[in-house]
Image 1 (cartoon, rainbow, N blue to C red):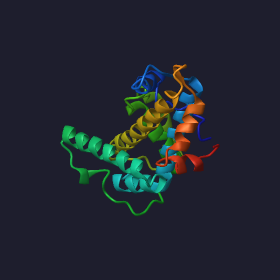
Image 2: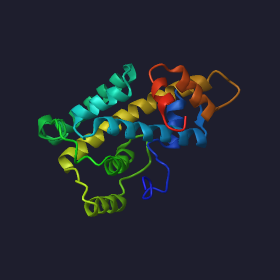
Image 3: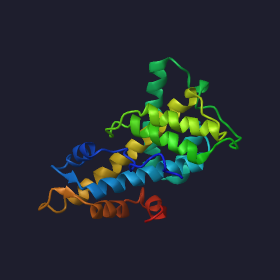
Image 4: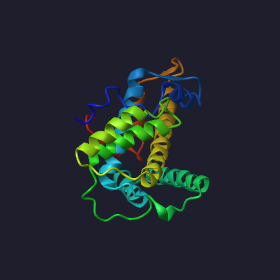
Length: 219
C-alpha cells in the first residue's frame, strides 16, 4: 500500500530542469528512462534518510543523512540544507529552537510509511527542480487516512522546516548527480542525449555516492 495514493512516479526533477543542468557543458537532453531512474533514486534517498532519522527534527535528519551518505557529498548537502533553513527562519522571524531542531528521543509515534508519503508530497512540491505544485487534495486525503489510522500528524511548525531541509538535500544531491552524468555524456561528442547507461556510469565512478547507490533496492 506504499504507493496506492501515488499512481504517478515520483517527480523531484523535471525534464526541463534536468536538461538545463546537463547543458552546462554542452546542449544535452536526458532520456525519459534516465529521468525516471534519477527520480526513483531520489525517492529512495528520501526514504532512507527518514528510516535512519526516525524523526523530523533537523538534528536527527542531519544524523540520518550522515548514516546514509557519510561522504563529502552528504556534508555538502547538509550545508545547503542549513542555509535554506536559516533563510526560512529569517523570513518568518522564527527561532530554530522553536520547532524542528528540538531533539526527540522517543520515536514510538513515528510512522515511517505515512511520514514518507507526506514528505514525498512536500519535497516534490517545494523542489525548484520540479514542475509539480502542492496538491492540497492529495495531502488532505493522506492526512485523513493518517488520522483514521491513529497516526500522529506532525505539527506544521515542524513539518515545514523539515520539508524545506529535506528538499534542499534532495536538490543538492540531484544537481551533483546530473553534473556527473553531463560529464559522462560529454565524452561522446557525437550525441546530444544522456542515457540511463550514462547515469549508471556516473554513479559507479563517483566514490561519494557509489556505496549508497550499490545498496539501493533493485540495483
